[in-house]
Length: 159
Image 1: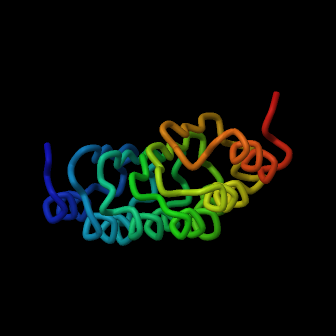
Image 2: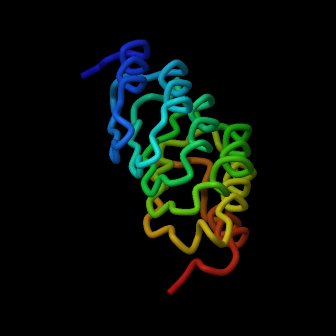
């Protein structure tokens, strides 16, 4: 639809409380949309897809913390830096204890430090429910970084 930030924020503000799935992919959503999402009473929202909206990343990280019931979060964090990864790992992921699917693709700016913060955020409760982890095109996540990421995660990563 290519709504843009203002229109996407208006859509979020008007969503029904019973909404379970919200797909705003490729709508050029930004900070206003993320703020609206953080304020919206969406107690039944279990799936969120905001791929293609890198401008909303910093604000959205905080909004996600208000949605602990999310089971699916799909967001290629086009501008995921170490600072944002730390915010995600320290404040958001530990609260998403129902999370089953997490997509963090296209994270070109995050280094192994950012990925380690994300791994620490995957608490035992989050790891117990996580079934799908997508890390496509994450240039800062080389073999050594991936090993560190999985090592930081601890038990719960294997058959």
